[in-house]
Image (cartoon, rainbow, N blue to C red; front, side, top):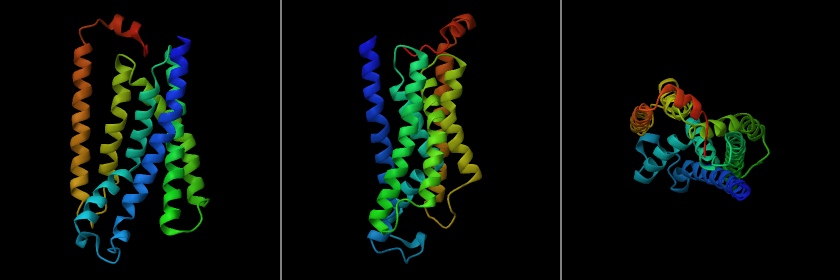
Length: 219
């Protein structure tokens, strides 16, 4: 049991910073593809194929739900300790580390591309947001490993959030990739929801007492 816990601690130390840094660097990089190709002066709809592909990736990676999903995924990956409480603690820490390192990586890459100052009010704002939102999202990821309704609700947080953002804050209409991104996200959200529903049906053979007794045993 002690070895398992130690292995889990090492895991979140790797998962959080690695996933966050990768997300931040990749997001910043795809945002700068038009500049690297000399197409900044062109209208977004008139840019070439590589810029359009980067635009598609940018509209995904710039979305709040994508950053939230990365924190949730990190929380799920590290939440296999000896107890549920330890799993949620590891998930919370991993979720916080993901968003903090993503913010550091994103604005660090922006400085490399554009120059300027890294420690700006915008950076501080998102670092504070990362510290506040990352841990709860990591806990959501840990709860996905639970059994019963709590796991279903946790698993639906990301697809529901993604669909809601596409409805309330859709991609800018002047982008040729706006509609492909919106439909891709909606389809992915529906597929995820159906998968969760099927998982609930598979567990339906157990009695309510068994589900309740199972609680949040992540082992």
